[in-house]
Length: 126
Image (tube, rainbow, N blue to C red; front, side):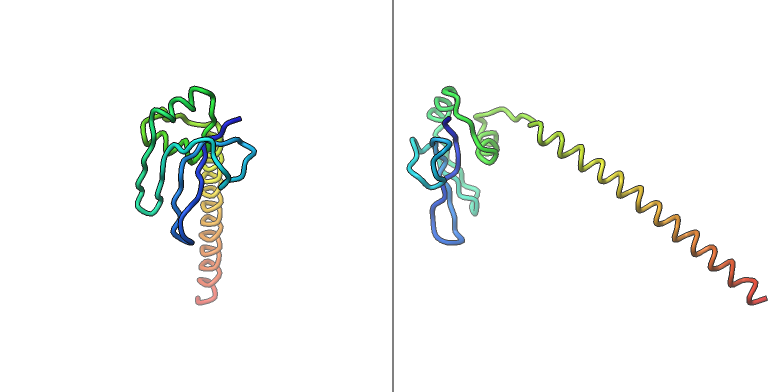
């Protein structure tokens, strides 16, 4: 299977990436079948060979998640919501609700403890 992925190059801590088409079993920085673009994460500069990318996508090449995002920003793919995003958002919402319930429970317990403490102190002073 052909994958569209990023190939790292550049100095240490100053990485730049080439967008390449390569076999899915090849190494990340191995020899690609074709170079299709360039991405510099420090300057956000992106250059894409639109015609070659459309041709590779038409042949059934599968982009990685990062490459898919770049292609969506470049207008070559329409933005789609992947199932993993839906599941992740549902889990995040459930966690927020559970945290809110836990915080409310703790606040109620603290308030009850404060009221009990103030109730105990009032008769002692009289």
